[in-house]
Every structure is written in C-alpha cells, then in structure tokens.
Image 1 (cartoon, rainbow, N blue to C red):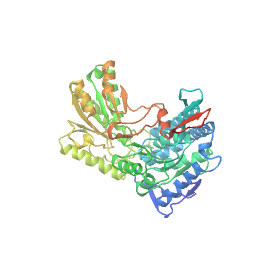
Image 2 (image 1 turned 135 degrees about the vertical axis):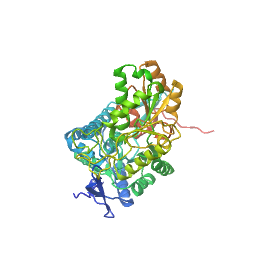
Image 3 (image 1 turned 90 degrees about the horizontal axis):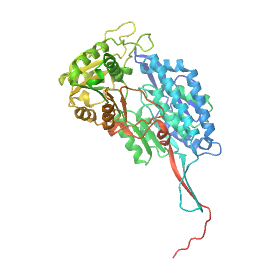
Length: 500
C-alpha cells in the first residue's frame, strides 16, 4: 500500500478515484509528514455503497452478528490500541501538534471508549416489555441499528472523536463511512487498520480522506445514508446538517462552545484553593493550545480577587514551555495550521483594538531549539478588562486566548456565564458546596464541572445547549444515537376483525 492509498472501501485500500493527493503537514515546522488521497464525490459514493451492502446484504452481515461477537471485536480493537499506544501517540502529536503525553492520554481514552461500549451493549436486556392490558398480547420495544452512518470528525482530537462515533455505531450493529479532517487524518487511517486487524468484515468500516467540500457535503446529502454525525465548526456543521435534514436523516451535531469558568472569591480563600483555581484556569484555557471545543476560554472571576488572580495567572502562563510536542519538557504545542495561527492573531488584534488589556502573550514567540521558525506557534495569551460586546468574547477562538470578565454577585456571574449563543461546557469554583451546586444547576451548558475542569467519563453523556449542537455522545444515550426503537406487538390469539 502506498502512502497515498488512504481511502478504504469494502476492505480495500485505494488512492482517490481522481488520483489527487494532499500534503499532511507537521505544524511544528510545516514539513510534509505524508501524502494522502484527496477523495471526492465518486469515492464517497463508493464508500456509501459498500456500507449499504454490508448492512443490507445476506446472512452474516454486521447487523446480524451476535452482540457478544460485536462486543468481542471492540475489545480486540481496544487491546490493539494499547499495543500501538506509543506509535499512535506519536502520529497524533506530529499531525495535530499536541504533546506526546496528550497523545498518550488520547489513546487511553479511546481504548476506554471501545471497552465501555462493548460492556454496555453486552449487558443490555432483550427489550422493554409494554403492558398491553391483555394476556393474549405480547408487546415489546427493542433496539435495532440505524443503518449506514456518515461520520465527520474534527482536526483537534481526530482519534478521540472518531472513537466516540465508531465504537457505539459498531456496537449497535451499524456500518459506516468516516471522513476525518483533511488537516489531521493519519490517526484515523491507523484506527481503520486496527479494525481490519481485529476481524471486522469488509464494507462495515469505510474511510474517505478529503475535504469537507465535496466529500462531507456528499455524505450529508447522500440518499443511502441513514444517520449523519458531525463534530466541527458552527458554520460548516449547520450547512451539513441542513443538507442531512433535507433527506430526513437522523442527525447528531456537535458544533463547539464558548465556555465560562466561573471563579468565586471563596475558592481562593486559602493558598491551596488559590493555587488550585489558578492551575485549573490554565488547564481550562491552554491545554492543546486552547484548540478544544470545551476550553474554558472565558474566565469570569469575582471582582474582589481579580487583580491577584489574574496577575498570578499571567505569571504562570508566561512560564508554559512552548515547542514541538515530541520534545521533552514541552507543555504546549503549535497551532494546527497557518490558517489557525492567522485566525488567532486576528482575534487578539481585534480585542486590543476594542480596549482589552494584554497581560501576557499576544505575539509570535522567538524561534528556539524546540520551536522552529517555520512552525505555527503562538503563546498562551491573557486578555484582561474584557466584556461581552467584544468579538473575542463572543466567538469561539479555538486558540490559546483567555479573556477575563468580572462579577460582584452570584446572579451577575450566572447571567454572564449564560450570555452566549453556545452552551457546551462550563465550570464553577467555590468553597461553598451549596453555592457551587446552585450555580451549576443554573448554567445552561451541557457539561458543568465543579472545582475541576476538563475531565470526562465514557459513562456520562456529552452534549450541549444552544448552538453547541444536537444529540448526545458517550453514555448509554451515546449508544442510542446509533439505534432505532421498534415496537413489536404480538397478538397471541388472533381473531377475525369484523368491520361494521
């Protein structure tokens, strides 16, 4: 198989039908990592046709495979992921720019997702019996797979996001076509190889590398796709979702967030509490250079502790070691592309023009041994004195930018936190347990952490309010996204029906 044969259809690795290729770049130095196939509409159509045959074909196709066998395959994939942990972490680091340690954590989380959905589908009952009010009638609601699933994943967590869609789709008995981001496709290619190695039948898992237009757009509108699942930006996700809805498909959209991190003064009353809140604010904003849909990019802090907190936050942010993710000691890698770097610079410039105060960062760093001049590096940046009318506060920046807003009352804190068109995630830091829970309950965000930021559990649902999307991933509901409910009504003593 050549490096550009990255389209996988019906069990075969192929180049693009057009013969076109795309360069995948290392964001740390802009060098070429690999050439991949640049798929198009013909490739998408072939992949959907293969997935449809694997779903609707004769005996032995994936939906008819016993649950225990499907779960066993998912567990084999989990074992293979751990076998290849270092290799995959390196692929993810070089492709996305994140640190090796972050890549290792991603592989472990992906492993856990495959094992979790294997356990969920194995331990389910055979259906929910519905009382029909008669001993002569047996009525039961059962779950069945949706069919052909089109899965679109983003560039920031390509392997993790793929697992959140692939694992439940396979557990439920579906077939799929996945299109990873054209910027970071390499770990998804490796995952498909592991699915094949684990014994997944040909045609069940199909992969098309290529751009959102035309590949993603074709998958969204394709008449033989039954479910369309998209994770990515609001604009492109909305367009793709509209195309999918026009075909009456099931859809799941995860479209990002602009997430508040609310810190009350009582959380900083002790030195330990203060240190914890500052460290968590750094973690919330700057992990993976802020290229996280759930990033705590809005620090909303009580006015009485604002000066001390932000001063210490900026001091620690300046000490974060920025460089190539594969280098020892590096804590923050480059942005994923030149386009993303330009976008971040534009947001900082607009914030300063609108009156924000720069506390640290704000300009490209000097090159170093771990930071090549050609890389897409931007330092952790703290912008103080921000308000809701600023573009940088309203829009998802997807970079290492932390804005600071202040409040004086609990009601004001809640109002600020909820004043966003998104509603994906947020956090509350307070030493007052009752207050923390009260505020968390009032926040209109799909995930709310209390005195922590960023942990997630496979068993918990992941979703959002507002323009953060539609649907749920992870947890039992994540499995149900890939199934239909069927009511089977069986009359045990049928009799003629007389019409009058």
